[in-house]
Length: 119
Image (tube, rainbow, N blue to C red; front, side, top):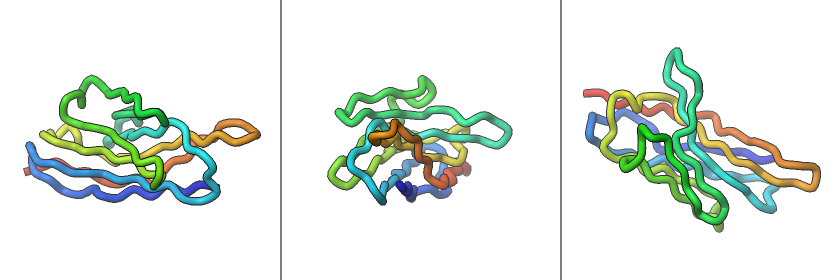
C-alpha cells in the first residue's frame, strides 16, 4: 500500500507564490509518473502538471510559465512551485502517483490541499 500526503496549500494574494509538496510512503519499490491535478467547485478534476521518473514534464496550457513541477526520487516526493498565482488557480490540488508492481500499475491519490488565491 502507498500513501500520498500533500502539504503547502493556503491563502495567497494574486501574484503571489506557493510551493506544494507530496510525499509518498509505504511499500514502494519504484514510483512511475507523478502529477498534480486540481478541482475547482463545480468543475471536473484536471491535470495541472505531470513528470515522469526521468524528469520529462508536461503542463496544462493555463499554467505554462507560472507553475513548475519537479521531483526528488530519493525522497519519493513531487513538488509544484506556483508563481504569479491568479484567482482562477483557486482549487483543491491533488497529487497522483503511478506505482508499477508485478501485478500491474496502480494509481494512488493524495487527500488534496486547498489553494485559494484572493485579495
